[in-house]
Image 1 (cartoon, rainbow, N blue to C red):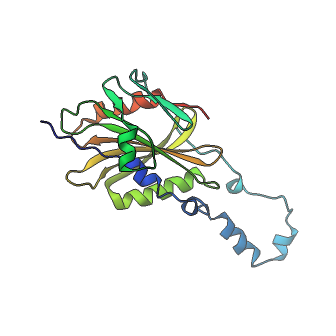
Image 2: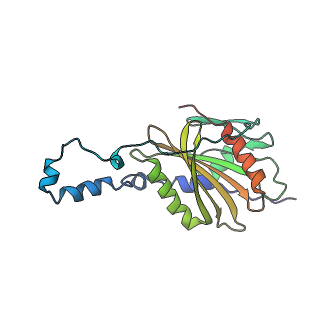
Image 3: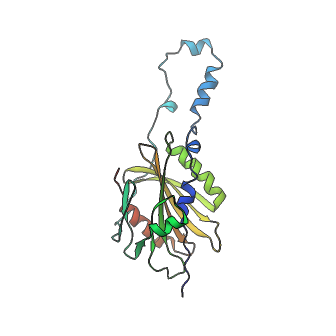
Length: 222
């Protein structure tokens, strides 16, 4: 009998992203206080509406990626999104919720022939006032304690919404596994974390093909 190991990392990371960790990350308020604490004649003579390019809000930069052909397997619907997984996968949200109640949806391989069932787990929280920079910084800090060889990769668009991207080898027992994770904030402040888990022995080309097929099928519904 083949023993399989299942990891649901997304909920562990997302549940720790509190409102406090997502707000006050930009540091702009501190700079304004510092500037205001030492008034000068030059400062008082400047127009009240003056600003510098660095203070102008900008959209988070992200790369448009061609994820290729979307997965054709089971369709999975979550809170504000839907996606498909490969034909050889099955949804197991109920089983995942037994491990962590914060998981919204989850799916995995029907048969993990290599002893590990590749899987995806999606979690979300509401954290009003946050931004993508703060989210990326918070996730990086959390994963640094949980993963080795951590990479903070270029942001990408997932169905037109910018997403942070992290990849690293999770320190798990009895064996480590590779986490490929994306996180998105919508206009209402909801954070959606999409975590893919693979054995460290899986070839990067095959791993990326699975991840990309799922992301290519991703649609936001709210």
